Image (tube, rainbow, N blue to C red; front, side, top):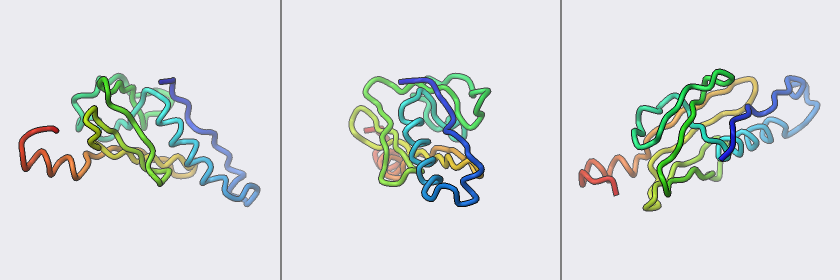
Length: 125
């Protein structure tokens, strides 16, 4: 994994100088998230298995995060949503990251399917 770099912000895009630029920025944000050792700070207490580091001073939406062995982050079919998958292939959490320069936000939530399995069986996998 790499270090975090906030996707480029270009306010002139609002003036129509680059159609599709915001969608491109969202895609770049998802790619940056998937390729860096970070996760959203909001919701970080929901995944105690993750080895958490500090909130990033250059981007307080995120904090350093190291997934357990065999876990991974993967893209979904929407550039604002990604997933954390455990070593059994189960989606543990959903990650939301809106990278658009005019309205950035990021958080993670436990996967509904994982919560239902855990409540029903008391087991994680």
